[in-house]
Image 1 (tube, helix red, strand yellow):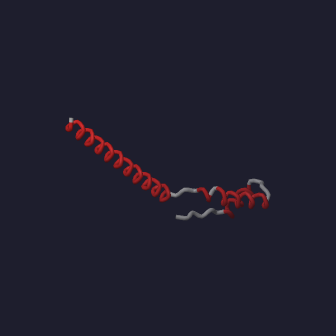
Image 2 (image 1 turned 120 degrees about the vertical axis):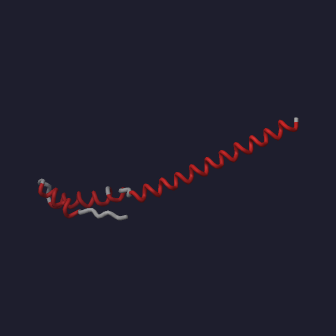
Image 3 (image 1 turned 30 degrees about the horizontal axis):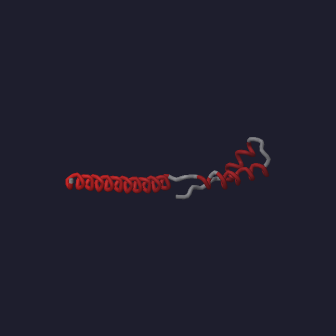
Length: 81
């Protein structure tokens, strides 16, 4: 999802506050480049959370399988004695 940044409105507000037109436009363009470039959307966060949940589920499954295999191996060793 893309978000629009109203650079014209932003620059206009700065000019109304006493900032020169050149500085207001430069400030608005800089804000658009740096702030909007780092903006994270809800879908970005959801995708990251889904990825993390999958990774944690896989790790838990591996840990449980390893623990079960170790327990079975120990039980087999005890039975042999």
